[in-house]
Length: 147
Image (cartoon, rainbow, N blue to C red; front, side, top):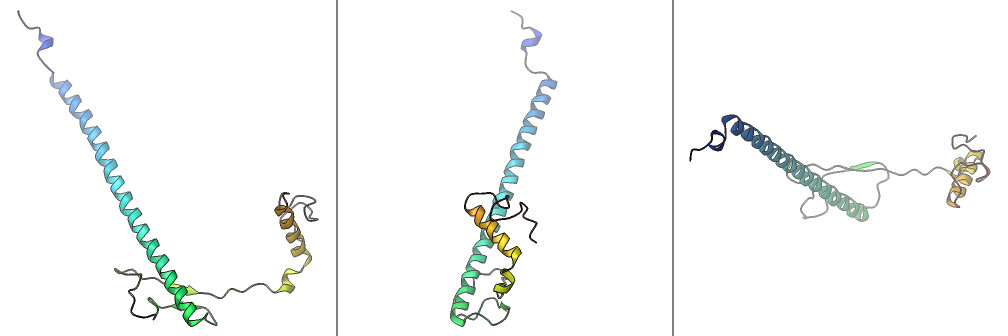
């Protein structure tokens, strides 16, 4: 028997198309692996920075418990002089902590007609009515209309 021309194998164009499809698939797979590796490295750095910041905040809280709150705004050095413990921020990373005083409003500034209306609306919202709705705390309906 004689073999037909179509049964002899693949043509050069078919092989080239198969190689092109294979190369595009491999490029996609390797590209997604590279993007995944970059995302993993970024997440690792972000986690490390978060852990350093949390540790630094705990250091600052311990420092403030030991030395009391400062009378004015203050930046704590890195690391605070707490003893011989190893610092949280290392490997070329510096951490800064700034302690700021909290100033609460005076009672005279809060006890105004506008403040009373706002507090009445907030109480109405807590009771289940919408914030700033007519009739909620005696307001006139608008959050912006404070007086």
